[in-house]
Length: 93
Image 1 (cartoon, rainbow, N blue to C red):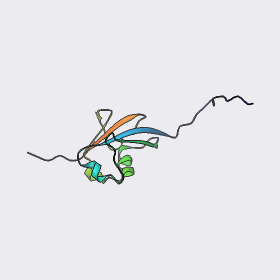
Image 2 (image 1 turned 180 degrees about the vertical axis):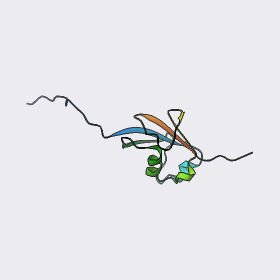
Image 3 (image 1 turned 90 degrees about the vertical axis):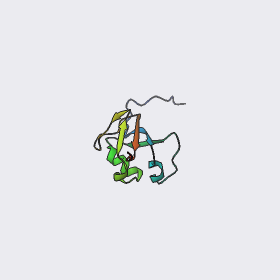
């Protein structure tokens, strides 16, 4: 019988992130949105705007995005094991 050995190099193609949609954004998501957020595998170097597009949410509905609690821009990349929170525009007086 042949003994199993661990490969010397393992190539990862993407990163895993948790996306939390806040406010009214869960209603804009095409699928079923779980309360704990979505755990997604995305291609490496996926940007926030690319992630919004993947989720099928219109970009104009997303006003604020954080990555691990820090304010993010549309061209910031998603990083491994990040918690990405997206919020809609707020109104009030």
